[in-house]
Image (cartoon, rainbow, N blue to C red):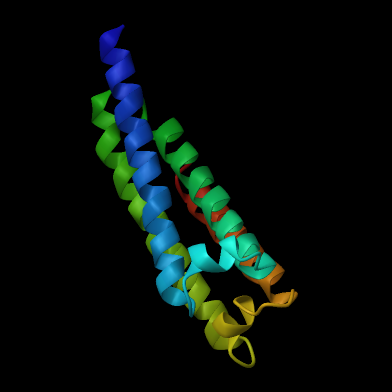
Length: 135
């Protein structure tokens, strides 16, 4: 029983670490401080952060589910989580490169802009691709 609890804590720790890493990657890729933007009521930043966390949660769910139980799957869950963070960062940069104007700055705008929904959708889309690659 204690062994299973320790494994659950370890997998949860890996999952939380992936969420934190993903948050910081998006924070680096956008101007300003995401946490401050969200705290100040910036809907665009909140939409992007929310989609990023949900997307990485999906990736970690699939990574844990498909790598098996026990200690042997923990390193795979970590590896696939890191892969998800990297691929989502790349996806964000690609979307910024093909979008007209200053994409990242628009996402951080004080007024709601539809580009935040596009950025959020891209995060979820990339996550689904990574999830499918794990099956």
